[in-house]
Length: 113
Length: 113
Image (cartoon, rainbow over all chains, first blue to last red; front, side):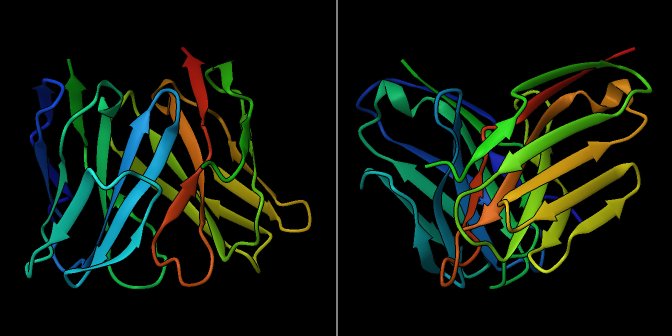
């Protein structure tokens, strides 16, 4: 099976712009989670989607949003970018509702200037 | 917010030596997982140990869990240069929190050939 894919891999944006990141889970996986990784805060949970429904949301401002499509692919959007949004954004998929091991994609490195 | 602490933050050893990393967490858990991350890439799942298990093995990896002390350790035996990476423990976030994982800050392991 193909692994989790994320696009784009690298992105440079300017403060105030918005960005959309994409994640394709492993075939058959219905749960997709997003994490932000920064040197200062480490790995922090953003949100989780299952069957197109957001099941859980982390402690991030409303500028961070996401969605999941019927084929389980997911996107996350960050509006009005701030310098502090520079981070590695990781997507992970898992088979279902229980807390199984998660399979991570390679991440999208976002730099905000 | 982070679930707990990992210790040490950095560890440097020679090939062939054993490496031990510790993780402490704050709240009751259903399971604890260990992940590896190579140089800013995606995370790779290593092992999952359930709250009713005390020890688990996978190849050169040995994980222990002490729920009374809210701590876990990861032992890598006969380390190799390819084991150089950051290692993270992650716990579930509790009942009704779905697949949300809470990560520690990680231990950076360097294995010198």
